[in-house]
Image 1 (cartoon, one colour):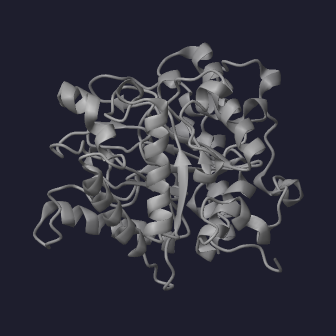
Image 2: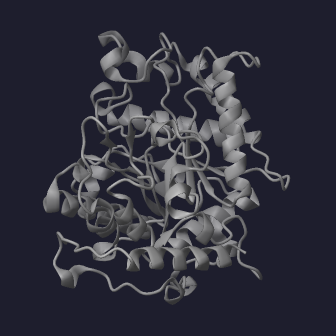
Length: 421
């Protein structure tokens, strides 16, 4: 049925595009653009993987992962060879101009995104007391509902964590906390630190939540967890200005080990996702905790797409090439874990052909291979994914009609390994 939906959606998109005549201004030379083939001409080359499906667990952080989590790793790695999933943060709960209902991506494409982004922030908040009348607990219930819905639909789920700093438990942006908190927050949650037990309680909350994600089929929904993201900037209290490389690595290793070994969370993949402040493999790996602690190599990148023109797109492509190469060498999954351009009513105008002439080429040129990318959320004032009637709508429709792009209706079965393995 999914294949039928995908074919119908493709026919619809081709009809829309054929009725819209416009000239596209490319920022790359025409001979750099990949030849576009129909989706049916992009078979997934299983023979190029260096491991068989039944060997997958040997290449994962947690070899005791559930069967569905193992299948997710394998299928993401498989897809990343020539296609990528497109997702959005809070797609089922946050909408442009507050127009609730279907996801904004479905409003414009006819399909939900292939990946749903969520956040552990409210779930682990100090004010979440677990009672039905508590606003934070209500958010937890909504997030669980959305994640299970996504799993039931066959989507991929990914979580970040805007953890509040541990002394006061109020803010995660470094601009909103004291100098003392900046200098001591991360150190305090390491083993032996004054807030270490507090941190373990937060991890226990994440662990119990992960174990509660039971789909309608009775199986645990796998999730991707990317803790302490964008650590190479200084806007979060876990940023590079507020801890050493060694301290960050120690925190990452403890976090993964505690979830995996102590709490026995077996439905989780772990994603490493700095921002775009690197130009070489060595810079990317400065705070890398080691292959045994990471399943997915990612990058968040907004800056290179923020009206930077051709130089910015080329930089984004070069950085994705670094991530892609490392993922191939280390048998990980490469990804563009967060991206987008915020367009708002009052401030930012759309960038012409942003999706097809900027983002698409940054992701696909120079043999870059990623498993997924994710736009940040839409809200009442701004959007990363346009809705019908906006000036960038046609460009987005053309982007998602590219043969490499996968939304929900085109997703293969992500939670089963191929038969006879």
